[in-house]
Image (tube, rainbow over all chains, first blue to last red; front, top):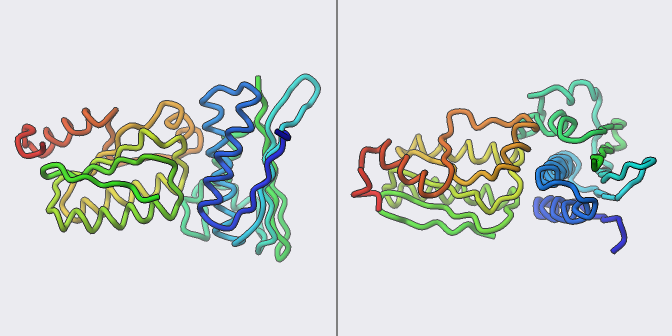
Length: 133
Length: 124
C-alpha cells in the first residue's frame, strides 16, 4: 500500500471513511490506540468542516519523515467560502454553523503541528501532523 | 446504518453496532424521540461501546438526545465510552455535562433502576 490516502469529502459518510482510512494508515507507524483515536477524531473534525461549510473538498493523509521522526500528516483542503479571521475560528466556542465551535481549536490540541491557511472566496486548507514517538 | 433500538420493560436500549455518520446519529436522535412516546419509556440507554470515535458532532447529538428524552419524561444514560475515546474527548475539549454516563450496559441498567426506583421489577 502506498503511504498516502486521498478521500473526496462531500457527505457525512465520507467523514467516516476518511477517519477510518486515516486510522489504518497511521497504525503502520506504531501509534498507541489512544493516539490512533486522537488522529481519527481530528480527521473527523476537519473533514466535517468541509461538508458543513464548503460542501466539498479533499483530505490527503500521508506518512511523513523529519529526521528520525516519523508521523502522519493530514491535509484537508476545500474551495469553499474561506475564513475572514482565523484567530476568531481558533477560539473555543465560536461557530457560525451548527457545531460546538470546538472542531478547529480542539484539533489543534489533539495534534502536534497545526496550520490553517484561508482566503475568503478561495478556500481553506488545514495541515496537521501527529508525530510517532 | 440504522441503530437497532430494543424495548425492554420501561426502557429503550439503543445498541450501536458500527461507526455512525452524522446522518445516522441524527436518525438515532429522531427515532428515540419518537419511540420514547410510543412505548411510554422511562429510561433510555445508548451503548456506544462499538464507537471508536466520539467527536464534537456525536457528543452534541448525544447531549441533544438526553435533553429531548428528558423533556419527554425519560432519563438517558450513555454507556460504554471506551478509555481511548474518553481521553480523546477530553483533549478535544468536549463535555457531556448534565448527561448520565455509566461504565457498561449492566451499570446503566442498575443506575436507571435506582434512579427510577423500580428495583429492576419493571425495568426488565
